[in-house]
Length: 457
Image (tube, rainbow, N blue to C red):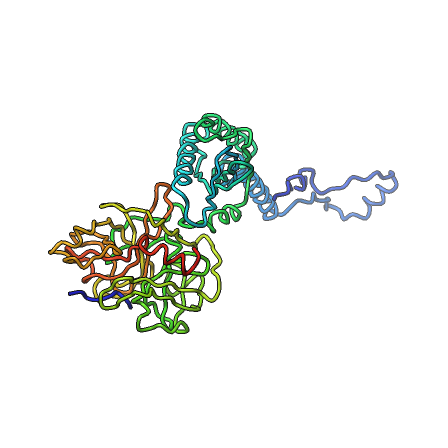
C-alpha cells in the first residue's frame, strides 16, 4: 500500500594647509652700498620674478581640503543622524513566586504564560512611547529562583543615532520602570529592582544561543512546500541536521541538546554502523557550519520496520556542538502538549523535490496544517494505519508534503511566544504530495518519557 519510508577617527588637518597668498619673495634689510653692488651685478633688463605654486599642486591641495571636509561632515552626520543597533540586558525582581525557566529545556505552562504576558506588556509599552520608532525587539530570556522570588532576565534591541545613546538608555529604563509599576498587582513585580545595561552584539547572541527553539529574527520566508518549494534562509531552522552516510545526505535529524539528536529509526535499520555516519549543520547541505561524528545510535526497542510504529531513534555525537546563531537546539515538547486540527507546523529537509526527483542543495521548508487522526484514517486516506503514536500533517488536497530523504527531520510547532518545539519526526507516507495522502510523522509527545530515560533531557 505504501511506498515505504523516505530514507535516502579623523584629525583636523585643515590648519596644516599652507598660506601661499603672500607669494615667494623674502624681504631683506640692506644698506645703500650693498644695494648699489647688487644692482651692479644684476644683468640689465632682468628683473627678479615672484615665485608661485604650480597649478597642479594648487588643484591637489584644493581637492584634499574638500575631501577632508567631506569626510568630517559625513562622520558628523552619521554620528548625529544615522541609527545604530544597540543591545541591552534588563533584570527585575518578582516577589513571592518562584519560577525556574532557564530557557534551555522545557518550561511549565505558568512560566510560559508569565513570560508571554511580560513580552506583550513590553511590546505595548514601547509601541505607545515616544521611542516607538527606535524599538526593534524585546523578549524574556530567563525566569530563575532568587531570594524568595524570581529574577526575570530580559533582552532588548533598539536602533538610534550614537549621539542619543545616553538619553535613550535613560528613556528605556524609565519605560520599563513604569511598566513594572503598572503590573505590581498581577506580577508581584518590584519596580525599584529594574536594572538595564548595554551589552555587545556577541553577548546578546550568547543570551539566546543556549536557549532552545529560538531562531534568527526575520529569517522565515514565505513558501508552501518542500516538493518544488522555496529555499530556507540562514538561521531559520538552526536545529536542522543532515545525517550523512559515507559522506552523502541520507536522512534528516533535529538537534535537541549539545550532544543528542532525534531522528527516525528506519533511517538506520540497514545502516546501523555509527562509524559510517557524520552529521552536518547548516543551510547548505554540502557546505556545513560544522560537522560532527556519531558515537552511537539508539533505536526504540519496539520499532517495527514492517508496521512502521515506534519509528524513533536517538543519535549521540562524539563531540559536543558549540551553539551559534546558526546552530541551536529545538525545544522538546511536554508530554501533555496537545495539537489540534489545523494547527500550523513546519517541516524542513533536504529531501527530494518530488517523488524520485532531484535532491536540493539548500534546505527546503514546508508550511503545513495538523490533520486529525480520524480524518487521516478515513477509508479514502490511510484506512486505520495511523496509530495514536503517529500524527498527520499537510493538506488532504495534496500540495505540500515532505518527500524521500526528508525522513528523520523535524516537524516544528511554535508556541504563543514563537518558541519552536519538536512535535513530529518525518516517518512515512504514500508518494509525495498526493491527494488524501498527507505525511505521517512520529508523535514526539508519545515518546517524551523514553527520550528522558535515554538522555536525561
